[in-house]
Length: 191
Image 1 (cartoon, rainbow, N blue to C red):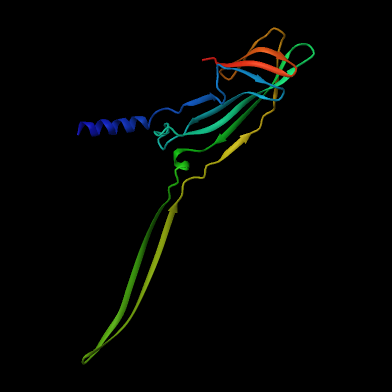
Image 2 (cartoon, rainbow, N blue to C red):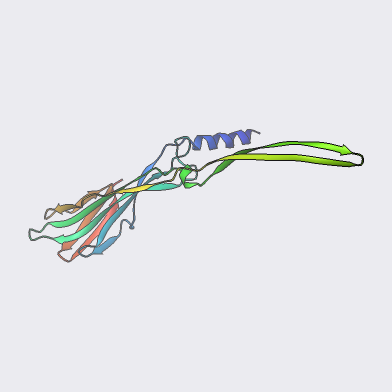
């Protein structure tokens, strides 16, 4: 019996865990890589836990997207500056565990009224009657989830000659070498 209460308490407490917002690089970090003009150098995905009915994090660990950041290599300008273009996209959503897990419930009621007469004449009985039934139902469906992409402008980032590090949303892009047509770099976590 104590094991049941411990399990029940663990489920209740896990339903009250706070919503966690996280970022994750889409590419492997710590490796030396090569990019050409326009190539993607870094993509960072942002997401959060789905919110449950109690305002806490989903006990199954499900998440929803909140947006992303992309960094593209543009080249090296005539002054020797390494040029990147950064694009941030934010996703607004009302998605929760209740909208992700489809659940519909229908309740209804029925009423039947019967009335009639019976007349007996010897061994014969004659019945006259009417019956009417009325029914009503109510169906409750979950709220439809929406996702809205909030557009943003692309931002040019320039590293001065000799500058080798760029911090982007918790990640460090280290420029190992750069020319107008190629970038050797390494991405590491700043945390």
